[in-house]
Image (tube, rainbow, N blue to C red):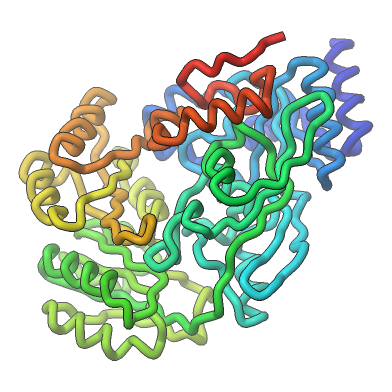
Length: 450
């Protein structure tokens, strides 16, 4: 107990006693994210908890925390708002959890970029940018709560990805990173080197600053288009995605009964209709309406640009928010993540529906990756057993659908395998004792323990 108290005092001397949290209830709460979307992860991660929660206010305080953690060989995990879905911030081996939400300064706004601390909420960043006639290129559907550092370390794409791609498609311009050493080094990371830090779950370093790419503000119109035929809704979505004359921020296609789960939209959702949720430039709306009609659909709900990001936001029903609404309606639901082939996705969907029927509901968030249009899917699936879920994944991959498994907390098993060798090499350099978010990389890392 004396050792525990002594270590507590060391942490308190760095960040202040009020910013070291040791009570069990708070530690349990802050040691969790939205891993419970997955029943597989729920069984695996429910009992994981940090020993200390520490809330630094600046980079120097983080350096102090890392230094004493290395001296005592105590693992460190970093959290933002905890809006991730794969257990990215859950400490597998206890130790210290650094809560970055006090590091919430917007440092500098320039034409085309914004530099921020990791704990700034993306909703605030977007608000400040739009006040200055700019906006973020991409942000997650959780942007009101999600932090800059959390998005970069644990996210990938979101609203805006149909035009601007994912985080690694030039939407992060620079990172400032601390290494996990007794005397932490400060790294300025740019270009291809950022792939070792973006979506790496904080296993290779701790972000203290992020520079996002920004673009000129657009007046966005939000709407829902409804279709009696699922194929028509998908072909319409593809048409909008491909049309370079239409500026768009989001295209989300939901098979019925997914729209029935959207309780706040209950009054504007038509029964038995498949829907496409859109954010398009106001100037393009008449063209969009005509395309809806051409595909035998109807625009059934509109939100004008004057109400953009006020009140109901249609982005709250896209990306993995869709899964959240389904879980609220039916706890037996879970989800997958997959990329379909643009030239064969309709046939792939047909094969899946023939085999799984109402065990698999289609939900696409259309996006670009490396400039190519991708029918990216977060389908809802009925959960039976872990084995049945694995069978669904295997079947999807057997027909050419690339599945990014959301039911693992391992970076190299959830879709990052193409970059894992480089990430492991960087982890060896920056974290020689393997103390940064241990248990999140499944491959052998050859780390020097001591």
